[in-house]
Image (cartoon, rainbow, N blue to C red; front, side, top):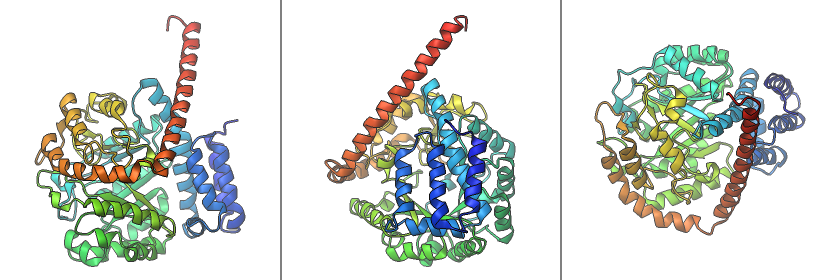
Length: 481
């Protein structure tokens, strides 16, 4: 029997109340609750977490227990309810309904830029291409969230610009939508004691602080003193037992520093619970291809991060190399989309082309637009999960999609043609293809992925057949409708 959202929330909060008293007993109880609430969904993900909960030799066992006991209890309750119950268990069912009914992508998360303004001027930042005068109003962001929740989306990620330029509005949105979880990429320099107090009060805002490596590398790109301000923000958050993580972009010059074991360990010491690693993208007319990592560096990134995951207590996400876990490209609304500060709805935070604006179309209409349907119909763009992107590894696809859908550049300062962007990726794609083949083809990862994909296809077919039968039965009862 399916458990209601309110009952699920009550049960989860009760279990978390008792976690600090006896974590060895009550964290497994929480896992049991999640299993009961799942209705059979997310089997693979739950198995991974369950193994970490019960296996004391698992690298994430101590991480889970330490995190559960060190984070502010009310914030932890809110996170588990919003992220697990609402954003995944409850939200996924709604999302799947709209995917099946409208035969289009529906995202799990929505990225949006509250503002294009920023208090820093970082070298090579693609966000700076938008200028610093664009803003989504409070009401526009609120409407995006309301539309998203109607589709089953309860997880919102702020990018920019520097989102915390609008921190009063962001806190007000947390208050207005206590059933959603909000994450913000931020340079961290605007996090002060007052803002930390606001975070502790609303309980549903998590920062991911952007950092370029150690002090010299960060200050060279972001400005003198930026590293100190970012680490001071981490200290404030840690003192108040608030969760946070870091965001890192690896390039050819900074690769060794930003992916080193010493850096990883230092971020753990500072209190970071997770890290998002992003591969540099040559977005923007002036973007340099010389910053693109080499094939050898990317291979090393794959090996290095998997090694760290096996023994380090910080959850690591590699946006470019983890395609096997999410079945390839997640953009175009398949798992997320991006709305910039001008309201343009981009398929990806790195691909600035659009045929829709939130001020003119609903989210659902945008997801059914030619551009987003081209993503829906084209995914995955490659059967090799180490070549997921229609821009970086398969630039021929982005050229075709933009031309075929007549999507326009959303870079208002210096519009970049798809041909110009993709030409910067052609050489990289050609160099990476043989390396990706050698790593992927015939590997256990490929075999596991193919088996999982086949199971997913069978589940999709069964679900769609059930939906069609239900619709047919409904029409038979009411032929006029």
